[in-house]
Length: 296
Image 1: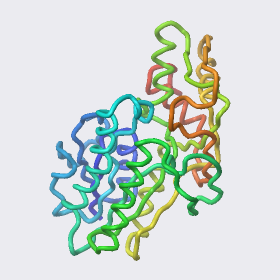
Image 2: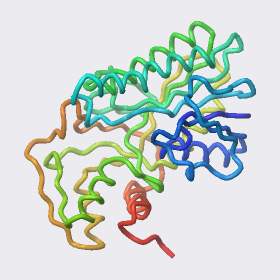
Image 3: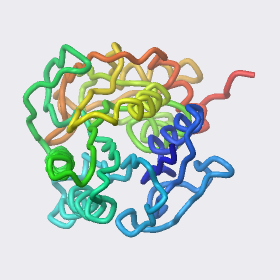
Image 4: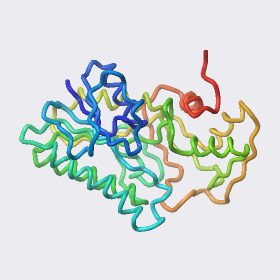
């Protein structure tokens, strides 16, 4: 199958590209490189640098939509930031569905987020609980999901929705681990926005990517479908710091309270089937960020 991955030069998107290649698929990457990196694209992969909504999909059998803007921490800064979240989320997805959708109803996999649940427990990996958008980012992702559902029922695509928890692993460059490394390299001090008592589900990026690649085997039936992508491990930023301190001592300063910002999900536990260790994924992220050396 010839698959296309939008956002395939990003952290998660590039992992999906590698997983698809390992599964024997031919892969094309579409990315405007606004946040993605050219060196994330495996050698020999067809690459089109452009807006995902205007790429050429004529010879594509299935599409994985991984392009997104996911900086939840800035959602309430100002209206322009919220507009950016919407335009690079819901509006981009709508335009892409219009451009890619056709009477052939080709498969369309949307990489969404478990942030659409708000907080609490999601007991079954394949099961879904009531959604609760607590940030413009989560609201935009819910809108993306609704668009995929609508275009599926309209026989324009065969939709599949993958709701991911936070991913860690090699190539990690954006998020709390990267923030902590920058702070620690500056003055060996970490300033956290919450007290670190909250614990949330994480998954190794390669487990997430392989599960997304495996979805290709189930895209022949009617849709829309949705699935959570997670592991059985809960993680706190304090667990990350503990691993960082294996290399050198650090001073920790943190704010009071369990929420880092408005709309931040607290204690979101999503049971999943990921097999790789989250701790190993954090170590691999720290190697990518230059904090520690990789294994020989």
